[in-house]
Length: 177
Image (cartoon, rainbow, N blue to C red; front, side):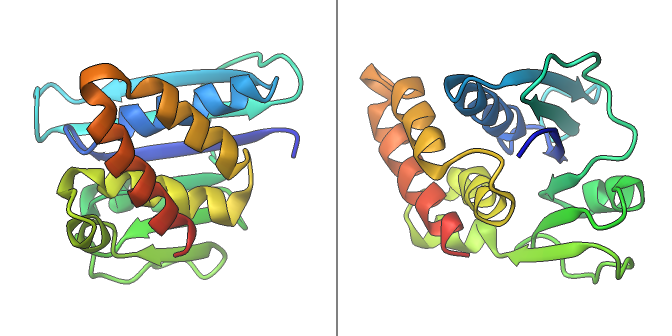
């Protein structure tokens, strides 16, 4: 896969920046060019937060994306904001634990994932973001699952090792979604 971009969006505190960084690290580990562009609402927690990750085999001219090829949306406001901006034929990964309303566009590939429910069942409610990352990787293949797993393992070490193990379990559950 050459060029690929994705918007990851939700409320602050849902871990969108973390999964964006993991995707960027995995892509860099695979020798790809990467940009990661965060955007935060004015609130510290609970406000809007999103990031854009661009991955390419060639140098990237700009981290800005007008019509993303994919979106991971964790809540309804994010779906409302980004559904219409996706490119025709794009991939939309939706957290159905928090979004019950249907998608309006028929020209998108939609993946419905009850991420919060899966993370809760795994005993790690905060790992819903990792479930979503797993589902996204399984459906788009921009990087290998092994590269994400490695990024998780090296990012959660020492006192954070237990979080890394929980995140790996949640990511793997997302891969199967």
